[in-house]
Amino acid sequence: MNGRMRFILPFGAILFVLVLYSAYWFYASTQIRSAVEDWVADQEAAGYVIEREALTVSGFPYRFQITFREPRITAPRSDGGWHAELSSLQAHAVPYDLSHWIVRFGGPAFLADLNAPGSRLELQASDARVSLVYDENGATSRVGAELANLTVLTRAGDPPDIRSIGALYLNGVVSTDNTLRVRGLVENVVAAPGVLGHDVERAFGDTLAMARVEFTVTEWSALARNADSLAWSQAGGRLDITDAGLQWGPADLTAVGEFTVDRMARPDGRLSLRVTDPDTLAEALVEAGLIPEQNSEALRVAAMMAPRGPEGVSLPFRIRDGGVYLGPARLGGLEN
Image 1 (tube, one colour):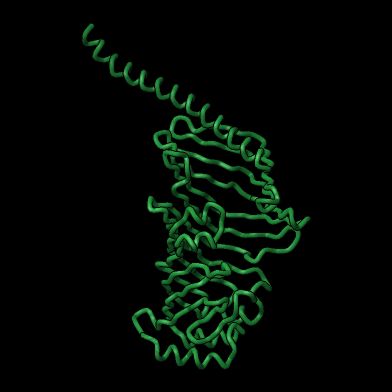
Image 2: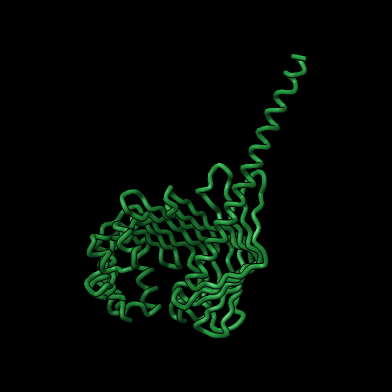
């Protein structure tokens, strides 16, 4: 009898744990479904219209997976006035960490602008996901996004400025000192025909090879509260760019700098640009019509006198009083 009990007890314990876990999973899935339905009701009360063929919670036993099948979402005009249709919308989390959810968008997706009747875009991507992490109070503390091989087809209406994106990565976190920290990278962005203008496209091409940025926004709550940039600036808010890079045709740049806004809510600040080949860049800017030809010589002289390092020549990029300057050359104004 004792030998038989020693054989049975481990299996009984395993079975007991499985029963407890199954009960927890099905109870939690019911709570999750209820929370999702409450969220949908809150959005509809705010003016959104959310329709779907089905809402399911699955994934037992390894995860919780929420699936909206063929969702159709219409935003009120106060929030942009758009309409989206997707094949599916899924969110999943592991049972031991319900504070971290990964949301996947199933394509193709169709997007319409209600402010431009008749418009309709088709979006296809091999991967499109958003990662959300919540704190103990239920507020979003970290957000990330990944997008791969996005193509945009215009089915009706005016085409957008971008035809395709090779890859996009974005990560943001709000730290305990009320600072938003963001890191982003985008590769192989192809502009739609006619967006750049003939001279710009001839000088730089229609494809942005790479752009990256790392920045922090201090006094984040003052900006996030009402999106009031003046109140944010008055609270001491500042955008600090700790690293940035751009590769677009003859433009091969890296930069650091800081910005805020002036009394007229216009950007105000400067970047320290490191230009790999300032002469080629100056010629391209003139060819594209971005700076007058008479300013190109001043830009070349400034590049000759500027400090040189392993990453190229350092030049100041400034936005001041509504004007945009690269070195001594004025590129234009923000009002243009």
